[in-house]
Image (cartoon, rainbow, N blue to C red; front, top):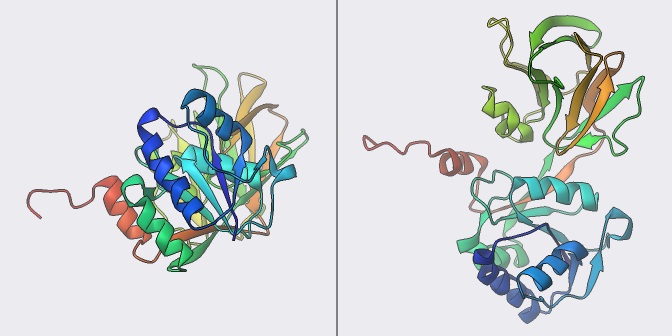
Length: 293
């Protein structure tokens, strides 16, 4: 068995947790394939050099034979690990070193218990849908897949933009707003949730279309099947707008049409046997934390 470890940076408070994490792997003779910039951060900034076998710097030199990929950090790090490894058949495991963390759902106080369960096979896997984004009439993102959402935003702080949305060629609406979010079920607990969108379970086969601060208050979030092909066209006083795919963003011209559809492959994530999505919701959103209960 061999595992990969991805991270960006951690605080000094999290180093004792990482020491337990890497000690467990060493004591169980599990080789580690680690993201080189993360190793350098631990060694130079945290004075901690974990016992590892080899390194990778991008998906191009990533060892696709590893059995698990551990993402150390928050949900942002989880998205970066997806981008930097690009091996979707290998279960991706999120270890939370931050605060909220819907994707990085293994908390630091249970890290050894979680590792033990994983090594003994007490877990399940879930395949998460991905977005595929095409910019018609413009150069794209290069890697044009996203786990959370595709977002359109105005480029200045004043003028709204007008976004026309079509589903499978049928016109849905035209709305003046600050922007628009097309979210996967995974992304329904991210940016879309913060602007009033619904929460979808990760195995839902849907997209959420959610306007950001629409000027017409009758425009509400809508859930559509993920078999749909969505086209977005933007107009406004300016000539350009911002579009983002998870953590990456580019500026494009108004003449560009954005086409969004479900990718033809999914990302495999790992969940422990005693964890459910609904339990995560209760814990992270503090549902039921009422003195009357």
